[in-house]
Amino acid sequence: MFNAELKRGSMGLMILAALEDRPRHGYEIGKLLEKRSDGQLEFRVSTLYSALYRMEDRGWIKGLWVEKPGERRRCRYSLTPEGKKILAQQRKEWAAFAAMVNQVAGVGHA
Image 1 (tube, rainbow, N blue to C red):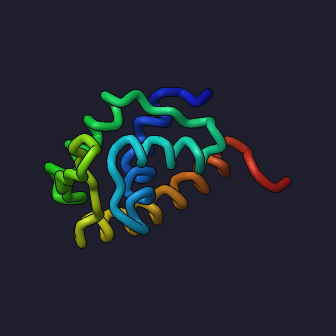
Image 2: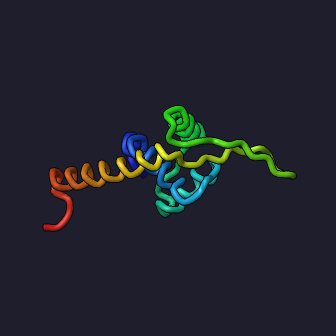
Image 3: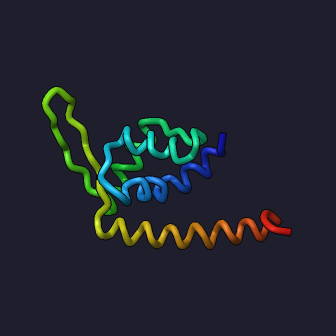
């Protein structure tokens, strides 16, 4: 439904927000984003995992492989202290950017 560039530009913020309350594995992150957006957002598995790997390389999230009897091995991602800082910063930037775009585009209250 949304332009791919818009999704790509905001995916990091959405992933960090999905990990704010607890660790999650990739599939769970994708499903949570879909649920929070009322089904308007869907990410390809390859796109989601590429973003997760990039964020892990930057030190924003940490992956931990977990094995449970009867289940396949999964990597659960959690926010690092740096990731929490980045999330707060990106939320502020997003709010300011969205307000500016709304002002320039004439969106909002008349």
